[in-house]
Image (cartoon, rainbow, N blue to C red; front, side, top):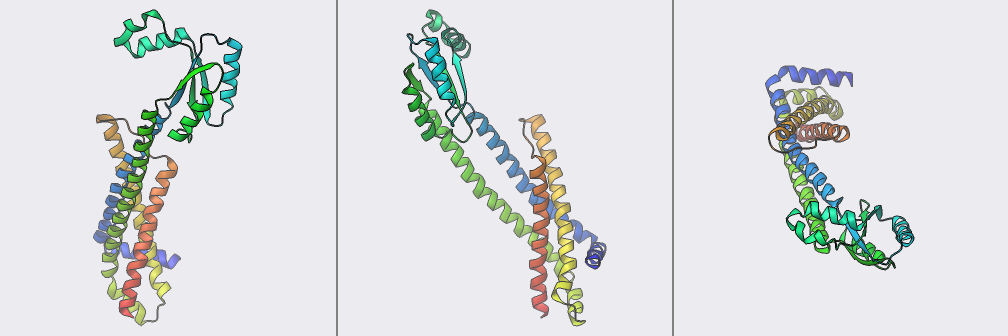
Length: 283
């Protein structure tokens, strides 16, 4: 392994421009993939924030006793699909309506809004089927006159989320495939530039594993350096977008590390494939 590392460093020194070109190509390929991933991450975050507002509003009958309402809230709070239950009095409902619908302020002067129980659903339980089922259970409670959750809005939100997920997976695989192809082609150029060296090594009896190791090590180093450079470029792009356009969320440490490791894997795989082809030609 030490000999392979030394040979990899020699390869860098022999063709510094080609090595820089390989690292830069890897970096920009991963940078394009990183930008897409950044957009996908922020789109998912935005959808999660919107989904967190999915709630069921159960209107309480005027004749309902306080004890019965409290018991109903306790029951609803035990549902596994529910994350929070909040009581909204008639006065609070009226004040909220006046604030959120200021243009219709005069309509609410009579104070005709009933009290309600607002139910927030837990993450993973906000699809239309689950929301409708929970609303039906709440509707069956004695103190509840009506339960509403904006069925049409929930349906549209769910469709948008599914569409965004499908598009993200398809485009993500496409970007990753293109990045692998470009990286493989770049590393292949570096291997072909050393075809004479590989031929000589085979003539003196070097095994395939011995020939591959320096190139795999070189591909690993190039992949790591390219991944780090791509991560820095993506971070700069995130800062620029946040400052001049819209606030964005950057990758956490785990995702950033996976990106760098992805570059390393691409470098190793590209080197292995390119060296294998060259060895077969010599054979």
